[in-house]
Each structure stands twice: as C-alpha cells, then as structure tokens.
Length: 381
Image (cartoon, rainbow, N blue to C red; front, side):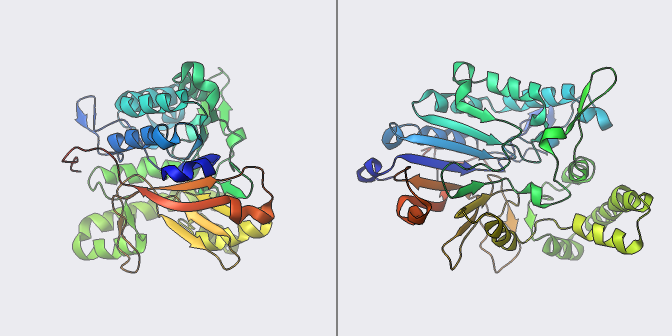
C-alpha cells in the first residue's frame, strides 16, 4: 500500500489458503516426502509486512481459508488405520506440525500482538480434525493472552468479513470432501473420540500418500487428465499402477457402498458420477452461489490450488486464492503460476456503506507475494 493511500483505508482483509504445513522436511530421522510447504521465510515476511510500517495503525484481518495445516500428510505417527483419526492421533499430528514450523507459529503470534490485527481460521478438508474441541484449544493456547483475537470455530463455513464479501474454503462443493463440521466427531463407549472423515480423506491417506512417496508431484499437477496422458506416455508403469489403484479403491469404497444400499444401477452410476466431480467448474458454482445469495458481491474460495480472478458482466467477482505449494499446470492455455504465493487482498475504505455503494468503498484483488527477504538464494525443492 502506498503511504499516501493509507489514510483512505479503514480495514485490510487478507485471504490465504492451502498452505499445507506438515511435519517438516525430516521426521524421526527420515525424509518426509509428504511435506509440501517450503516457504516459511516468505510467510514470516508476509505476516511481518502486514503488521508494521504503513499497516501498523490499520485494522488487518488475516483469513486463513482452510488447509493451512495438513493433518492428512503427517507420516510416522504411531497410529494406524482407524486410530489415525482418533483425537489422540490428531493432537500428536498438530504438535508435530507446530514443532516443524516454529518460525511461522511465532510470526502468527507476533501478528496478533499488534493493535487491530485479527485472525479468522476457516476449517478445510486437510485440517478437518480441528473439529475436535481439544484441537482448537491446543492451537489457540499458542497465542496465550491474545487468543481472543483468533477465531477458530466449527460454525465458520462461510465468513463475511465485510458486507458483500463471502469466503469459503470450497471443499463443500465436492461430495468426496464434504463433511458436517458440527457432527463429524463420534464417541465410543469408553469415551474415546474419533473424527469421521469424508471418503476423500481416506483416499488421500491410502492412495495419494502412498504414491507420493515415489513421485512427489503426484498431487501437484493440473489438469488431472493431462497428467494421466503425459504419465502413460513417459512414465507408463507407474501411471498404470496409480490408475489401477484409483479404480480399485473407488470400486471397493464407493461402488460397493452404493451397491449394498440396494440402489438401482441407474442410481448407482448417478451417485458415482457426483462422487467423481472433483475440482469442479467453480465459475458455474459461483453463478449459482450469487443467485442464491443476491447480497454477495464477491466470492473467495481456495481448495483447488488454481489461482483465479473472474469479473462478471454484472460486476460480481470470483477469486480463487490459490496455494502456497508448488503446482505444475500442463494446460498450455493457462498461466503456469508455479511458485507464485497468491492471496486475495481486500481494501475497505469506509466500513459504514450500503451495498449499492460497494464498488466505491471496497477494492478486491488477487495478489502474489514476492517476498522482502534479501537473501541471495532460495531453497531448492
């Protein structure tokens, strides 16, 4: 923000999503190939920049729009199969991630010590175990006396930081990843609590994580169909094994599930088609959302890792805030963002406005963080 503009802004809203902090590069003496986040220094710079200088006296709300921590990508915990989803396992995974990214955690803590700085955490599908009250309590305890400046609640599925702006993670549009945050915890007869994950989370831990140990890019390539075509041509045996594992898993977990419900084959295939609607056309979904929510002018999502900004003819705006993990786009018609650390930025010039004056009082844009670290090198991944 230019210094001569700062007096014209009452509030800044920053939206980041899908950073996927996991258990670090090394865990228990082994290389952790499931760690996708390698930008600790850049994120620390980002948090420092928006809490000091021109932003020191301005209200800044940081919205962490899901999948900030990645509990699905924490290997080598002493829990297996269903025990992986227990409350005890979730707490251990949280502690491993915190210990692996202490610099980021310290930067978050410093951020909320500054006046008028707040954090809102929206739960995604990779950090879904935050539905446990003990997980929220453990995370919020990191902020000590400033914990009241951090919102982390099951009820925050759509966040409205200012009139006309809606923020969602986006997993709720896919049946494979959708779950009821208010009713996702089950309790056994001996009072042990477990997270009841969507089948997409089982798929990540049982299929994706296995093959990611062999090819670290397995979850970073879009579009998926181009990845499969490229793989069959240049990495045939691995790609065929991966495809067969996907088919086998889907048949055993989903087809058999619908078959046992004694549905007709027409109903089964209709349900299977809906289950496979991954990385949907969010542009169409956006129009549907605006039709259902006429007071909304801007919809911001994450989840697909594909940064995007669309301004429709009626002035309404759709933004996907992207990811802070390295992605590879094989679609030559799309810009390959690669290492771009993208985020949405909203400037509120006057918070006391009517929706008819939204465009005069609110500026919305998609940015990417260039960093302010002066080191003459960056880590190679």
